[in-house]
View (spheres, rainbow, N blue to C red):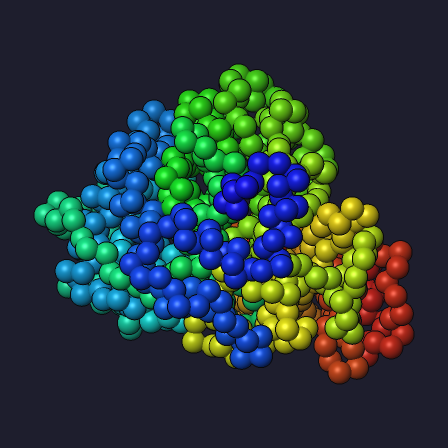
Length: 636
Ligand code: WT7
């Protein structure tokens, strides 16, 4: 029986039982057999939920890029590691072999060193989906610098907040990016953002769109000339198992974004193991995850997990709608993609278009389909199964989070019978628990509650950068000796899990995790706005969309309401990014509040969702009369 590669249901149950009975020996065996270590660990796991502190493979030494690159060179140096498909279908795809990836990463690593980057320094990467993004990530890991990738759709303010939070010394960006028929001025956004940052000494700029941007003397440098003269070998920095590998920001329900810190050994072992099993990757396969490396999905399942397995991983620069809605399927056909991993929102958007866009292409190479980021509805699931998988490809509905580092609950293809809308069963080593509001575990089946994980797993985030107390408060305080996910879930009669959605003030829009508080903060900056409340409501394509209730300072505000709506959305775009824009904005004279002054979002959510049959008792509110007003003026 192989612990590393599970091939049928009986094997899953055996492996799962073993993994739960003795997690240490389970993970130890995997770590021993499948990776390259400079020094063995002294201790597989030590943990303390109170502090909270979790250490995996303590005492071990390694470099993750040796595991992702060097050790494959002898056996598969000429195999494609990264298959880059450009935005423009007429531009040639780039097959970067493991040998070439090695040289590129080493050159970039040497450039970083020459620019004064040392082990432990933070490097912000703000790049579109071009090979340099993956290379920059790996180059940081090569020299022990901590990468902080910021999704290149975030605004200059959002970028600055993230750079300042972790005091990044360098930014790696490009002159601009291609996105469908548009170009985006990334360098301009960086310049704007850096007006508010003191820590950045150097900006390395990739020339992607030849837009001839302005370079700031002494700070900005074109990357290519530096790479051209750099050495193609770079000794890997030997890292301790628990040295930070990267920071990745995720929105919280309140306040500033949380810089989740992932460390080296556990993250490597877990992402590699889950990649292999969840996608049943085999030599010769061509795996494609459509996410952006700016999100955790891209970190774990475009870069680290696939490369640790010596896989071929497709990186796509463009969008699903350019030059037409057949682009995804054209790429699957062209590169004979075997595993395809995307978000429900993309499936729903593509399912709305003419089927001709699918039928034009040969999708017979596909073996496994995956989804991630939000619940998938039944209709989208069946469309995916019938039209893309032709009913022959298992679908893996993978539940996990930025904080978990890797996939937690998911079917294993050919092992776990899939049921639409169910993420099904926990992966080996993962021990979910459903909790009630009193903090008691709900045992048995056909129950629902708050989803927690009751035992540590190797790829869990270890802290929030610069704020360990917030890490404790957010994830380990709601329930004793448990990690709280923020999601609700139900467990059906056979023990399958279905994620029912967030139970906090986070809204998942098109698979993007958005905190409502930072959006409200942005709106409240508008001089005409007194107060606001944001809630999510169901949306056909995006899963959820954002609905804003806004109180203006002067009731007699004479400005055109549509102009105000535009200004508010512009502010949100500037402060956070276009993904956080509101679909509907209702102006109101008041918001329902409890007697202690807390906004009753539950009521606002129901009104925005057009579900007012059961609002509950509103008589105890501070201002019950406002509920009727809000309902009367709801935007349909
Ligand atoms: C939140 C985490 C994990 C990578 C992408 C998102 C929701 C994620 C599923 C799924 C239902 C899901 C949860 C979770 N979510 N996957 N398969 N079914 N909901 O990472 O931005 O950290 O968001 O996404 O609500 O808590 P993230």
